[in-house]
Amino acid sequence: MIFLAAGFWFALGTVMGRDLGYSAFDYVALQFEFLGPSKQLAGFKIEETQPYASIAGTLSNVTRDGRIGLRIEEIVRRGDNLDIEVSISNNMAQTLIAELSVTSSAAEAGALDFWDMRVKETFIAGGAKKSRHVKAYLPDSSTPKMLFLSYRLKVGNDSTAIEQTIAF
Image 1: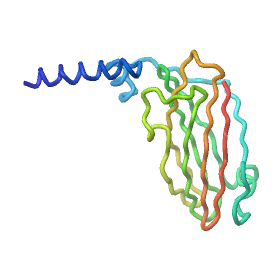
Image 2: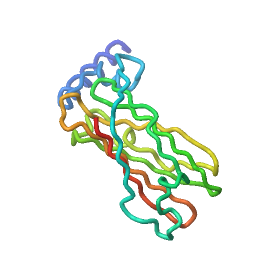
Image 3: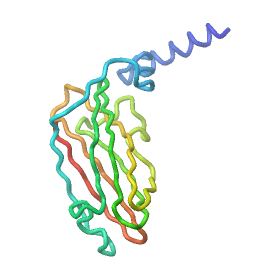
Image 4: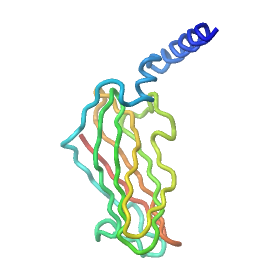
């Protein structure tokens, strides 16, 4: 009975995967990242902007003056997907609340779901540092190869946004 059920789910996954361009094996490899080859990327250029000033003004130029650090620690390619490790450090006395999302120049999500490309609210105490992982779909064949990371930062009643553009 289990053999028949497993065969049915495999066949269903293969049919559904054909529409997405992924086989059942590709989907399993995506979920279990240790399967399949991986390659660490280097030589990318990061441009950072603060698209709007903070509401109360206390978070203006917050990354430029070092009160908050946003650093791309590592980008690893696994097939058509990129795994991005981001380090967020809070060098202020107050607790920082950070959210993160990523989009790519590929204009589609591939086999990734909504939450693979986002980090929910993360609380970071004053003087602390946390690392988070997000994923992006960016096949080798796409041009240009760019990622867009958007951070929403909040301290007390003040909030701002920081955007990073990563070009390969």
